[in-house]
Image 1: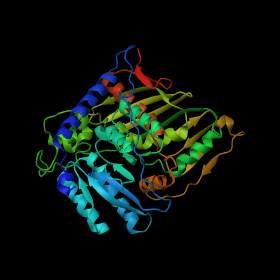
Image 2: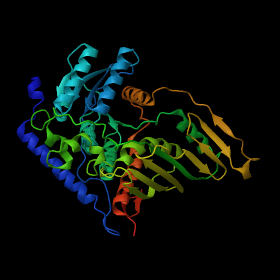
Image 3: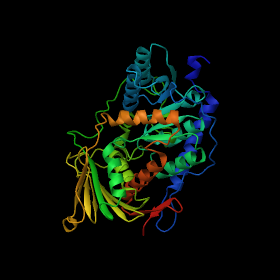
Image 4: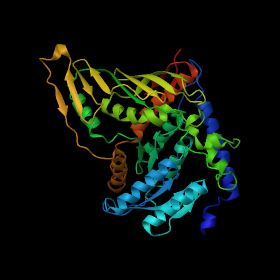
Amino acid sequence: MTQQNQNAAPQNGRRDFLKGAALAAGAMAVTGCVAPGAARIGAVPGAIGTARSRTPVGEDGLVNIAILGTGGMGGGHIDSFMRFAKKGEEKVQIVAVCDVNTVRRKVAEDKVNNSQGGEVAVYTDYREMLEREDIHGVVIASPEHWHGKQAEDCLLAGKDVYLEKPMTLNLPDALRLREVVRKNPDVLIQVGTQKIMLPKYKAAQELMGRGDIGKMTFSQTSYCRNSKNGEWLYYGIDPKVQPGETLDWDMWCGPLGKREWDPAFYARWRRYRDASTGIIGDLLVHEVTPLVMALDQGWPTRVVATGGHYVDKAMENHDQVNLQVQFEKGHTLIVAGSTCNENGLETMVRGHMGTVYLNGGNCKMVPQRIFADDVDPEEVVCENIGNDQDALRKNWLDCIRTRRQPDSNVELGTKVMVIVDLASRSMWEGKAFEFDPATMTASAIG
């Protein structure tokens, strides 16, 4: 197949694909529709396929990866993986890049070719890229509304996946993706949440798991930052990007359904409710994910949240959010997020007998005053691992070779998506939501 043909989807297949995406979006809307005491939120329905055989790679073998989405995060992944290869830190090469934006894709193509000294394959339609048998893993750095569908397609094509956060746009997508992985255990997903590799969280997990702070009662964390004009406006609107010329707009919209061209929506989709949960899914997941792992308190069972438009009133998503999450083992997590003030909450876990502090690079435990004679204070000095996101990328490559489950796996990612989705619904609908781990469904309370 010529490169020109590779980049042009067959018309019938394209029409069927877009029709299927629209039907899937409709199914999500129906499944996710909540009426108090009635409908429950569950996985996107439909049969789950069986993955094709995976192309093996030895423990010391060269890992061939593809980049799906070459924007800000995709470009960052390209830089990192090529740096690993150039420094001899990892045996990895990028064999394909895919983007519906040909302007952005050309930048990625030139960057890879200049670094690797060859000609990387380029694609507009990711499904054609997945037909390649030489790809071991795919890095998905597309917008949130594509995460669930593209991750499923990659897995069923026999490719391991590094999936950018949030794992999916909504809970129905997350629950389905979890089932895809459970049905196809030979392929794996690493969710690209920053901070999950920081040693302090593993130290906290061990310390609290021993019972050193007694019953864990409640914890807190936050992700707060500030901007003068509004969050995510630093994503510029490129006049060279035009639908039908340099951008396949219908393909970009995909699961969102047909939409009128909107350059601001395309460039700054995190600001819009239809395409993103804003602060919750884009920022808070970095702090919530490693803390949920360390707490090990089971599934979130009740979520309530409030959100406001206090400074950035032009942004559709909220610029201030506050979450309260209860877990099945009896624990409450409080989370704050802001894009209008940079001072957040100190990350800590409160127990009946002691408190664990995680704001710095170490894990520190201080006994409660009444237990000072029974519990010794402790501080675990943790290794400085450098760039924790690079550590996560290397962890994924190691898992591709060894078949060990990733640290930021689909099970943890689904628990976090329960929080993300139900918190977002709570803010928009003004209700609390519950999640039932027995049925893996959620609904509004009351």
